[in-house]
Image 1 (cartoon, rainbow, N blue to C red):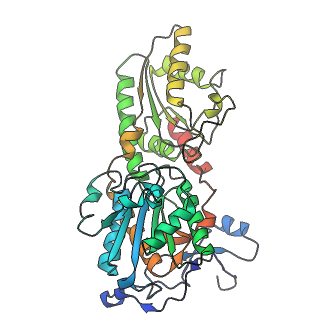
Image 2: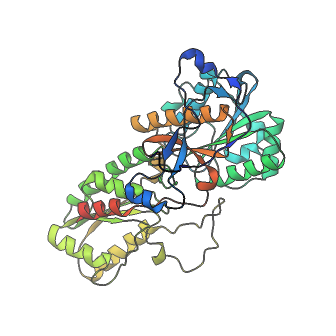
Image 3: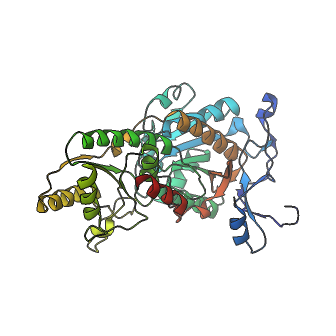
Length: 427
């Protein structure tokens, strides 16, 4: 690669890192800012980046020198958006690394998302220490609580300034990243030395430049159990149908990977692939043929699939994060399937299973828990080194630093290769 000019994706630094890291005493390995992870993973992708050479991310990891002096640094942690397995694991990892690794004396947990940074919510903040977070990874959810919806950015920055917070660690998804980016801009406008470091949280696995987000493997593992139950129910009756609705607002990763790992799914419906109900190529006709031949069927549908069949053009109904509220595709399909089968005098038994809230409130499984631990460690290292306006990513087998500008407003979707495998396994 010596003949190429590497385009390094820059991460903003609050200032020169001149304080020796206390990790030096513990014989840590250190990562230099010059160590990079290529964005492209194949020759085809590399050839697409023909405007000056390949692009690369800054590699995550502990730095030999820090921007902040640990003994004089106050850190804040906030968790936002919907619940997801592993949130407590990330919080625990941040606290353990900052306290035991760096000797940070004070960590503030802001309660119930960005509301905790408002003038009204700041009184509910709590002190976090290794003792208070010792067992939280054994529980689902987040010990800090969470919420959706915007807050006044100026007010949130005032809270950080008043609380003497030097680094704010933000755990959340796409909407949360937008909020964090707005906080960073206000901090820069006021010329304050406060770092903003984000940890990606999306159970749907739909954030860009994160190969796998925490909570995803737990969600797929538990979704497969729901599919197994639906399969048993379907096979237990003549013309039995198991209908399972899974999470996936815009991206069908959970539905697709649960179908792949199960092997018992006959129809997989995801937001990325439009489908029709009526006609010879419609879902209802295909289901009828399946029942006539095999006398049972399992359907998995992501919550964001088929919304074009449900929307009447009115997108005014939105949640506090500004997202258009999805219509219930599961209940819609249940009604349409039963109505269609009744018209055709086809006697069926349909069991509808929606395990979404059970799944997202569970503790993380072993794989996710270990992943969360590393995310928290790398976020701590980045924050103490003075990095800001960034997210800890995972790309091409390495943990990376990704500017928030590259994350906000983008969404990762199912790739054609994965979808092809789903088509093969479902037949």
